[in-house]
Image (tube, rainbow, N blue to C red; front, side, top):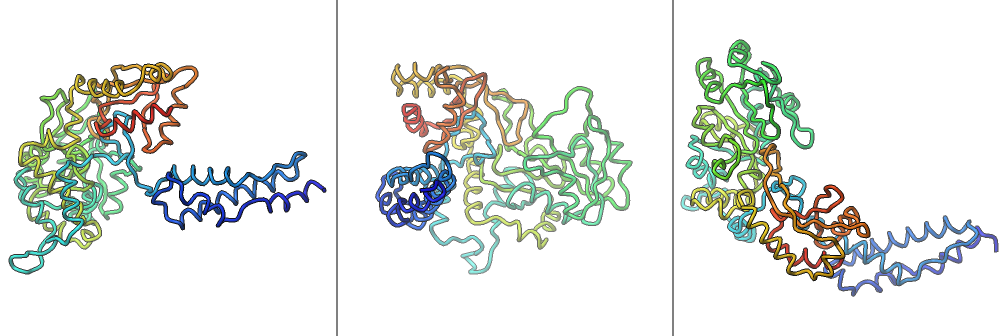
Length: 469
């Protein structure tokens, strides 16, 4: 038989889709996978096998079709790696506390409890129950934000970029916004202040230089077309050396003198001063509000330690203009964000935020406590496993992440692994393909698993993953 004619006979040896689905349907690793997804995966595996057979039929040694058991194994591997749900838990062993790609801030136990309570039942989201009248979803957090920040009013939208866009569109559309050249930042996803300025309909007016901007630069730029003075806190980088910047208080005073509102975008805003834990100075939201700035915007899922949200606090008259903007409806938060944010803010008011909010607890945890948690993992691993993987306990440094406190390095403890026979890159790939995936960082041919961001509840799964290696 000519080589090209071998393909039909080889293809006839392949099982049908139904036969392959039946073979894998009861596999323990596929529990919870809908039959429709099993069928789709079976079709994809069979299609790939057909292509392999057809392409190889012209070769001198035409390949035999894979047996059904081998095909079933491919289906199981494909589906077990993807899991039942696409959005799933991972073990963050990178040491980056606010890891943007891994979901940033972890929610507190109270926030998770409130999510379940509100998500599983009807709620008074926009209902004044006592009057049986329509209420405001923002009322559930407005009083809390006023008390915690000292501001007259507040508004919450879906993220901080939205908060800046809404403020610019509401206060300066068709007018000029004055910004220091040293504050024309770009954050993740190529979000740039000049770009958002154009989208808002405002005109950017740059003043000063990259490293030095003075109060007189703002004063000389103010004119009839000025709609807003915008100060942007460079939370994701630092300019050092021969520098000068205008303080929030100075800019607020200038704005009042000239009748121009002043807004400061803090980015990763914090409600507590972390200097007592060895962190560098970072302006807090209450401090900036007290400086006289008219509006302050900040994120909910960074140093605050709550859900993704963009918070704006400040003068009631200006907040009212933002709230009445039709764009606000497109950017508004849902009931789950309200529930988690209220619980997060409650922790600050109750005085136990440092103990109950995971972000603050991880950032301020002592290296000695982290080292004890790492030793807890080692006790779960036999000496033979530790020797095979080249496991050692080492000192390292963690990062804050999320565009916050970029110069801070946090002393931490990590488990390092990797040998000549089992290189760090290979171990990293294997751990990332497991369930749950484990993400560490490769440094100097060693895979580091940083225990600052490894939760106590992660340790059994991590020990099992290392044992499987």
